[in-house]
Every structure is written in C-alpha cells, then in structure tokens.
Length: 352
Image (cartoon, rainbow, N blue to C red):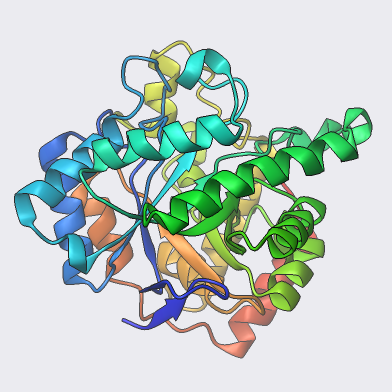
C-alpha cells in the first residue's frame, strides 16, 4: 500500500487509516484485535482512536476502553513499531473530565492517560477532538453562530495548548499535532500561533468527508493545499448510509442506527439519516451499477481522487465489513465516473 507523510511532519503513515471508535462496545476485544491484524495484513498501519471512545453511545463507564483494547493488542503482539497511533482529547460537553474541555494542564494529563491506556511511550499524532470555541461539525452548520467568540481569548487558549504540546513533544510523548472538526479560520490560526511559538505545527485535520458530506471542499480545501495539512476523512461511508443497508426503511440488527435506537437515541445516525440522504444514496448506488463498480469501493476510492491530500478512515463493526472495504482499496475511478459523481453532487448537495 502507498504510504504518505502527514502534512509537513516526519510522520509516515499508510494511505488508509483504521478507525477504532466501535472497539469495546459494538466490537468486542477479540474482534477488534482481529480487525487490527487484518488491516496490517492489507498494509494499513495507521490507527485512529480517542479518549472518549467507544461511541454509540458515549458513556462515562466505557470512555477510554478503545484505547485500552489497542494497548492490549500492542502488549500481546509486540508490534508497536509496525503501527502509527493517533488519538484525541475531547472538548466541552464530553463525558471525560466531567464535561470540562481542555487547557494546557488537561492536555498534559490527557496525554499521560492515553499513553497508559495505549501501553506506549509515544503517541504519533495527538489531536483536539473539537475546538473549545465551538464547531459547525455534527450537523451544527445549519444554525452555526460564531458571533459569541472572543478572538483574544481564543488565541491565548491556542498559545497555552501549544506550549503544552511543545513540552510533550520535547519529552518524546507525542510526535505530531492535529485538529478535528475545526474550521479554515481555526486551522490557520493554530498554524500561525504554532509557528510564532516554535510549537508543533498542524499536520492533519480530521473532519467528516464523504460523497454526502462535502463541506471541506471550499475554504478548508484551500487551507489543506496551501498549508500542507492532511485531511483524515472520518465517516467516509456516511456512518453506513452509503453501504445501502438502511435503504427502504431497513434497520439491520447490530447496526449503528439500531444500537442507537435501542439505547434511547433516535436511530437517525446523528442527523444524517434524512429522506434526501436516502434519495442521494439511491442515486449513487445506481451510478455504481451503471459503471459496474461496488458502491462501497466507489465511495472510498473517490476520496483518494480529491485535489487535496486525503487519508480515509475506515470503520467497521465486524471483520467481514472491514474485509469488504479492504477488498476494494485498489479500485480506480475513471474520469467519466468522476464527472458523473460531480454531477450527482450538484443534484444532491449536503443532503443532511
């Protein structure tokens, strides 16, 4: 598998990443370890996690379990030198730290806690799960209002966090720094402050990106190209919508939507499962049939055609689901198919 550098860092990773947010909830430890082994067999050495994982639902009693499962795999396999580890610290409103966000002290403590759970001495990429000033991710773009932000406070916060990250890098506890669910303005300010303080520069930004979720395509794409910031694309299959498994009102047992519904949620995949989204999925599936290509493979392969550096994060509840995704990683998108995908995006823009 092709290998890439994260942004301007010295961190080399595989061209695809394995997401682990189901590890410890929908995916038990044995199945989780089998997924990591299967991913490595396919050449994927890059693993992404977070201190609050597993999700669906996020619970205080399970926070950190996904990191622990990865740590147990590392201890069992002795293959730490074969993988690159990314994890994240949560912001305001999480079950971690009683809902408190992060400052310099929380960054230092969070890194130490993640290192213990992962059973390693160094985290390759340490990310901020979402910005403290607020975010338009998670379908908040429809009512996003940044007017309450305080620029001076935000820049002071960035400086404090970056100083803590610089100290952690100096101590060998992290190698690089990344964002998640951030904006074009936020990303450029993090870069400016980091460069002024000699702190770790933003190497990657982990935002939602798929055929159905293309908010990244304008201002953030420009930042990605000009500032050399790699997009780590989460939910590349739109939380399972693009597999087609939810079409015609289906609710597969054990699926993310079914588990959410059984846990008291809406089963709407965080607001993604809308009538327009289902129509868009049907259109993309018809397009895949017209071109003789598996729709899952098409959705993942398309991500690697983008004009900015993109690493898709694969996610699966079961080993069979992961294997199906891995089988299509060499799929090619023809120029004609790429143009047809763009045409469908114009017909079905931002369907959720």
